[in-house]
Length: 339
Image (cartoon, rainbow, N blue to C red; front, side, top):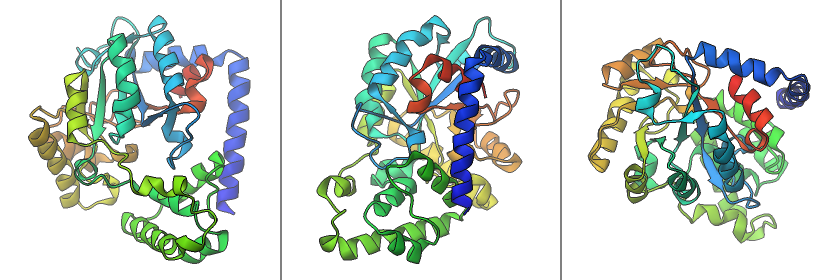
């Protein structure tokens, strides 16, 4: 029932967005946002995949196509100066003289190196990517991809028997978004335990499942996360590497000791492997509290990025999460980044 309410809310939000854009409110919202943030805007991407290839089991809210990404970078300089982190943060928190954008990526998906970097390099556009070393070292997938992959190969009854609740339809963006919000409310331990149980159920019945097609399960055998070589290539071509925690744990749910470990170990491993200072941190899922921000400062980070943060707090600067439905249309983009 909760998932159905979330789906209805998402549909109402989409209708409200269309009405706001029709009324021209996106330009007014953009001006107000830039005034609040000192002419600073930070964009957040996750995955950049070939157009028409699907979402590769990632939630739609994490995916843009390479065509839409390239199109965005073609017109964005008409409205904003695209800068690196140092330029964006110059004289912070004093306002910049003109609207400026920093492009960031979370999670270090390999497709950023494959599909985003060539476009950015050709246009001379810098960026900042946040990586969690556990996933760079192991190549493991994040739990949302593992969950959606398993859901694609289980019946509604099988899924409900293990995890409870409705099985998200891998082809329904609104159902997936509702499932993500529901699963984020679980503890980290519970999420991982249930995802593992779902995967075990898939493996146990795979030979008899019509849904277990090779293309649907190929993600289990192919690396999707960048390795250290790819991160070095990114760093050598204008993409600075920052910390995304060590294991992508949601930090406010962790003990003080674990928060410190996540932030300290991530910084140390990245600096060791890349031979470069790690100055910035992006909190996994944008989740933070006073303790997380304080420890980030104590562990030597210069700046911290969240999602719905406070632009006057150097360890809580907001970012705008982007996906295909937002960046395909300039008006929707301007409205989306202004909220």
